[in-house]
Amino acid sequence: MQNLRNTSEPPFDLGHFIRDRFASLCAVAASLTGDSEAAKDIAQEVIIKFWENRAQYDKLESVENYLFIMVRNEALNYMRSLRREKKRHEKLDRMEEADDSLWNNIMEQEANFLLNRAIDILPPQAKRIVELSLLGKSIREIADELEIAYNTVKVLKNRAIHKLREHFQKNNIRIDF
Image (cartoon, rainbow, N blue to C red; front, side, top):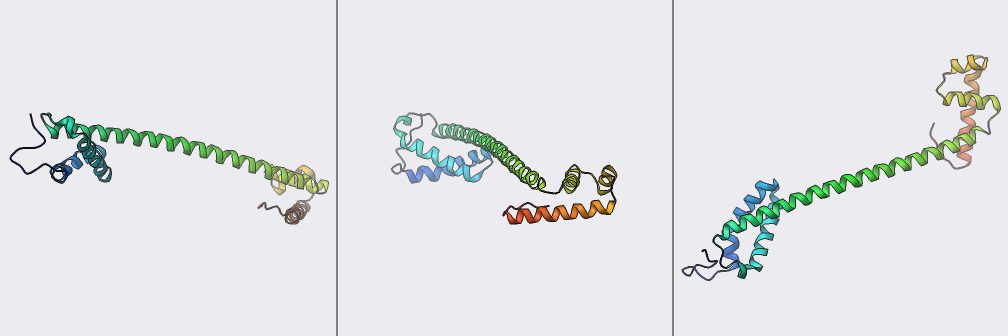
């Protein structure tokens, strides 16, 4: 059995313990995690845990083997916690996207409501031209459907847009179109 202290060596202390083992424990942790900073933290944690409970390990056959097992277990715990954290972040991102989508939907509905209310105050023919424009119809298609001249549709549409802009400015509403 390997004792933590060899009788031919100077008194066993934490400094010697760390110097003798830290680099190799870091190397093992780094090979498991792929992260040298995390490996240093893991090696440090293992040394601290082992050192604080060293009295119960006095009769170990191989302190090094035991430390390597501790490092492996801590590295696996670290990797599991990273996976859990990644899943939590993905879930939060999905929730934020849903919140953003809901907010955008609410804002779009509010903008549509304000626009429709403003369109309602236009004269009937201008109102119809704007509604057909919002359906994606071209000036030519609107002119054909309403059986009026192309230039008349163009002029009425421009006047309607001008009146809508004035309405929104007057009511301190910002809508870009």
